[in-house]
Amino acid sequence: MKQQTIMKLLAGMVGLGIALGAATAHASPSKDRQDLIKYYKGKYPNIKVDDYVYGALAFDADSKAQYDAIMEFPPFDSQIEAGRKMWETPFKNGKTYASCMPNGGKHIAGNYPMFDEAKDKVVTLIDALNDCRVANGEEAYKPNDMKTMGPLTAYMRTLSDGMMMNVKVNGPKAMAAYADGKKTFFTRKGQLNFACASCHVQNAGTRLRSELISPAVGHTVHWPVFRGGDNLVALQNRYTGCFSQVRAVPPPVGGTVMNNLEYFHSSLSNGLPMKASVFRK
Ligand code: HEC
Image (cartoon, rainbow, N blue to C red):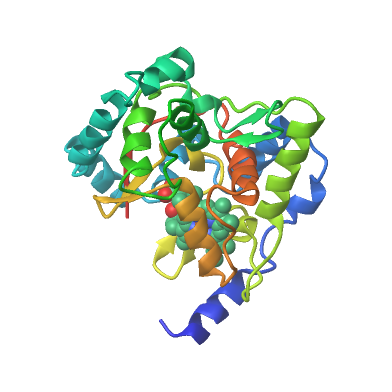
């Protein structure tokens, strides 16, 4: 599609909907989540909140049926299996990931990202895995390396399937990190002057080119995803893609801006069940 046409499409989307960001600048995380749910419910009363975990598929029964069929025999099983081997292979010192993650790494993914008071920053699950590697004398993986961290998290997150997302924001420093992530989500940026919210709030359920846009609530529970069946994509890599879509320079994966964005964004899915990993277009 020509650039001009895309610009026109995007420009047409501006001004629809509400300025939710400004209205809720100082609201609590649970109020933010409830406000968004109320907004989506008002627009799409027939879609169940539980179905938001399917992203754009919640708005399209045919694509959802296709997804269900693919998920019966996932084409990415071998990559999950590779991740399981990585997870189970001991470090050179004989210790394992399970020995240095809380609860042996089971039913914990929904607690991340978390605010670590001692480190004075947000720690994602990927950071926690890297901390575990470094504590055991191994080198950290690049957070966006889909040959190493990708399959490792794809497997590790399956150990938390069914756990509810449970991101906590306690204390003024955690709240500041949350507010920073929220600001990134609601601030317009890029040549096209779009915020995450312009698409995933105001225009959730509408089409951009051929693609239905997903709601932000439910976004973070199914990661990483396998796009096209075998192309492993981590959550922050997806953020990078969406930043680029509006011709904004994406902040570095694993940096403070991205981690705070993931913190805010994940808390919007509190109370929804985790499931790794899934197929996406
Ligand atoms: C110009 C519109 C637009 C903007 C702005 C935008 N996105 Fe997206 N985003 C899309 C489209 C289109 C898709 C693919 C269809 C879908 O799943 O929503 C997508 C997909 C996603 C997905 C994957 C959903 C899934 O279930 O697979 C996430 C997560 C996401 N975007 C987050 C963000 C964040 C965070 C920002 C802000 C940095 C952002 N997006 C900005 C249009 C946009």
